[in-house]
Image 1 (cartoon, helix red, strand yellow):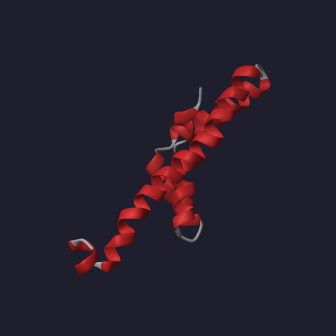
Image 2 (cartoon, helix red, strand yellow):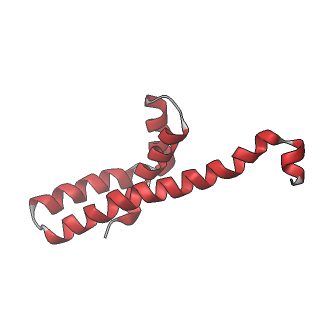
Length: 95
């Protein structure tokens, strides 16, 4: 047992939550962003334009503001935080 676990047992989950939030958010943005980019690349015309305008809307909002907006509308929890951060960074995975 290390010093942090001895004197601060509540600090132990604090080391795991940021890793879970980071990996979960990256996975959500990857799973949504890559298929959107591929769909826009293979289907030109109306589909590409619709995806492009949606991503432009997401890019126009700062990621922190978008995350705070999602968390303000829904009750806060770890899963909601992961979803909010993941949705905020979807434009970084587009083609």
